[in-house]
Image 1 (cartoon, rainbow, N blue to C red):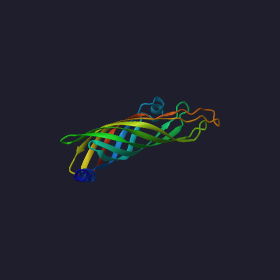
Image 2 (image 1 turned 135 degrees about the vertical axis):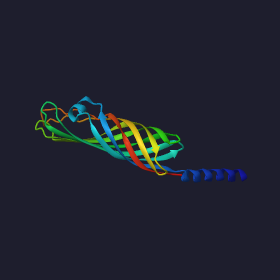
Image 3 (image 1 turned 180 degrees about the horizontal axis):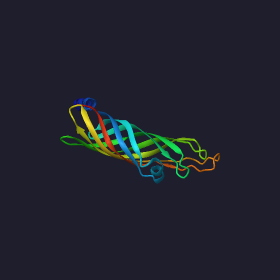
Image 4 (image 1 turned 180 degrees about the vertical axis):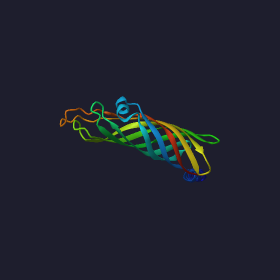
Length: 197
């Protein structure tokens, strides 16, 4: 009976500690998206600004989970016919981070899935005017959380996303759509609030 009571007490202490040892980070982010796909770079002139938000929470010790949402939009010109074209891209990230504590903040590495929605609008009469499709890729994350004060932090990061979205051929126009290679590097900064004990 005493042995069972000791085990129950240990479990209760662990649950109590887990519930109260929280660490949440919520931030807004801005970065430069540098695509690696040749056609994407040719049409949209080497990328542009990407904006979003991210939520990170401790799961166990230095292991954290994250969820993010980011948006990219850019206007360019189709090759050959040089008609205006616009791309809108939304990416939702979900995965894990490992944080290493330092005296001034935390270094982190992360890995996750990256469902991606892309919409293109073309003004050429020779192609389908609108394409819209979901695909799934992945993201690798590296960065530094710099503590500004007890509740505020700066996130300096470098991410690499990899995703290819396949557009099936449509016979209503005399051209064949290309797959959208939307992989690339992001480098930027975030600013946010941290709640921990």
